[in-house]
Image 1 (cartoon, chains in turn red, yellow):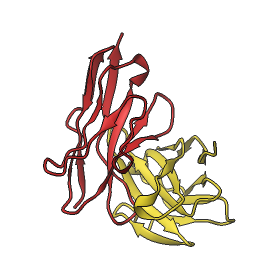
Image 2: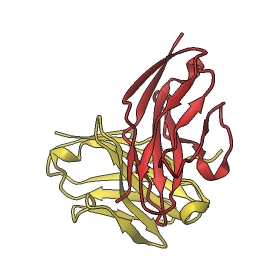
Image 3: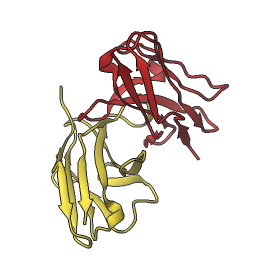
Image 4: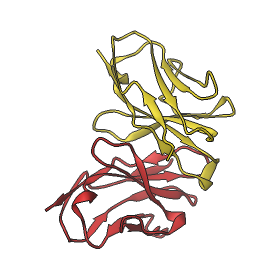
Length: 108
Length: 115
C-alpha cells in the first residue's frame, strides 16, 4: 500500500535559517511525489513536483529512491513561508496519497 | 487564473440528513476528485470521476456517498444519511490529464459539521 510519512507535525525555524521538511514514502514502484502548501485560510496549492525539478519560492526537493525520501528544503526561511506543508504521492492511478502534514512557523 | 470553486463554504446539518456539496471544476478539466480531511488528520482520497463515471473510490466512499456531474459544469458529492463521523473538510479537485502528466487543482473546501 502507498504510504507517506511526515514525521514532524510542527516545525519552528528562525527567519533566515535553513528549513528542511521531511517526507518519506513507501511504495514498491516509481511514484510521482509532490509538495502541496496551504497558507492560512487558503486552499491547497501545488508547491512543486519531483518530475519538474524546479525551485519554487526558493524551495527545492530531491527524490531519493534509495532512502525513499522527498525532503523539502529552503536555504533561508522567510516569514511568508509559515504554512501547512503536505507531501503527497501518486502512482499509476490518479489519486493522491497525502502525509499528515507539517505546520511550519517562521519566527521573526 | 481559473480556480476550482466550492459551495457552501460551511454546512451544518443534523445527523441522518442528506447533504449535497457542490463544486465547479476548472472548465477544460476532465478529471474530478473529492477528498476529505477530518480535523487534525490527513487529507484522504474519496473518489475520482472521469467520463461520467467513477474511476476509483476508497473504502470511505460507501453506499452513503454518491457523485454526479449533473449539468456539465457542476460536480456534486451527496451524503445520503449523514453521521457524526462525516464531519470534516471536503475538498474538490480537478485535473486536465490522466496520471502523471498533470497536477490536481484544489478548491477552498466545504466544512461539513454534523450535529
